[in-house]
Length: 412
Image 1: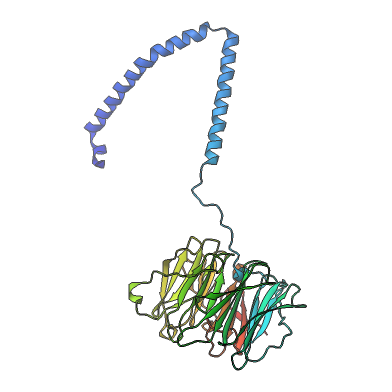
Image 2: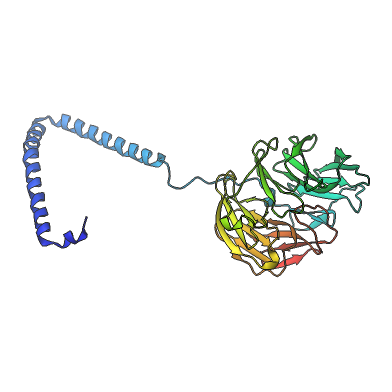
């Protein structure tokens, strides 16, 4: 409708006349009915009038109550609170691997070396994960000459005072090159052994437990690399071929029995770029993020359905020296940190937007990055060359902690 009509005096006058005629017609129809009702009411006995008024009051109250119940039961325009995903990066009692030793932080914030008293050699691989400051698992890969490497899992429930050991596997044809281990609760866990390459391939072997590490089943992984699970069924492996700077993302939705490549919708100008995909993190059971180095910039992908689909939501340029750097993410509630190259970035809205943080430490060589409540976090950095995605043993690493993501302090 043309709003200039409302400024036209003639149109307004006609409208008023039409309303007046309509009102007169309605009064002419209602007046006889109202008169008959008045006469009937005055001739009705007083006790009957009171009974009718009481019934009318009950009916009115019943209508009001039904209206309130209906209103309260209608679907709300806002979503119900989403339960937090059991991501290990949100543990209140973190663990860290530093120079082949297992460190765990207790409830008071103190870090303690609780490495199993096993014969861990200088070339052996070690990986660990803890759900609390008391309960955790450690995998040890004994690297032996002539390709007879062995793999073991240790479990403790008393902060390392006692350990139980399970012999997991022995490799006669390949040599161990990296280890990963993760648990989502006290029962469900996975260990991933990356083996030395044959030609350009990097095989991987996956082990799963559903009884807290007492028993493990072996299966073939799509590749060796980084491992991440968010619950007992959904997880990812991020890896790729040797001497080929374009790693791949694989997803499982049956606890690791089967895997499928999960393709991200890359920009058209990244068709020939080197691509480094970081491990996904989750802010809640459904909200998560993946950071991808596209050589010239970082692209942040976000999921709102628990990782089934990913959408690019944010990007920022990279320095030339960071074009093949692996992005490392950490998340807790709606807060997140991203370390890539010489830059540290933060989000406070579950990965929808990011800003650079003036950190006092270079986290470009971070091997692990974890975030707790109130930006309380920690990182293990390599002080020399050490590929973050395919190693579990660097002999020149350092543990840093932070309270705000800006100031990072070495743990001595």
